[in-house]
Image (cartoon, rainbow, N blue to C red):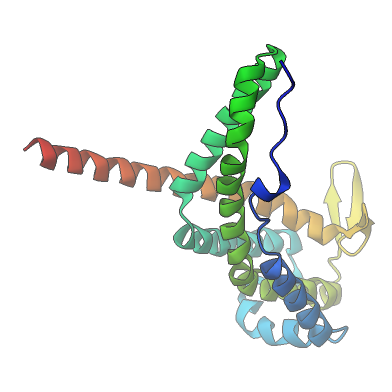
Length: 227
């Protein structure tokens, strides 16, 4: 039996539009150019976020607090503008499909490989549709992320530097928040260490809440049908 043919290019689903990513890049570039070395935007935002700077005396606490606020707002925004239940369902289906395809190839089950390969474009289309929805939301989340990020830049460059608290202590060394670590300023790494884990926790909590709410709706529907 001949080896199964890969799907023809015309059968492949279209790639998601890169326009949202382009918009985001233009937004970032434009705002950074406006902000410049004088921190024009960051200085204006200091009137709003200055309540979190503690006079520059506790820079790590400020970075953690503002990072938590930014992640919470952006995660909540994404949760209300995307169908998290459908996304999770598509991920589970795609994972199961890929597992079946891998197992069929290991078993040299050419018939099953052929059938699954024929289904692959439709599966990829669903996956790319979910990715496209996430990309469409990027400009909106960036409306929250970029201004706060510019304020943090102002906070470190101006407030913390004026307070003389740029040096933070870690178990193995003393590090300046403006020193480069792996090509990034240390303050970006401090912010990242807070934002990524916290974002995952908040996202999982919101997803669990939505699943619980959806299950209650299904149970209510079944009770009505039985009655």
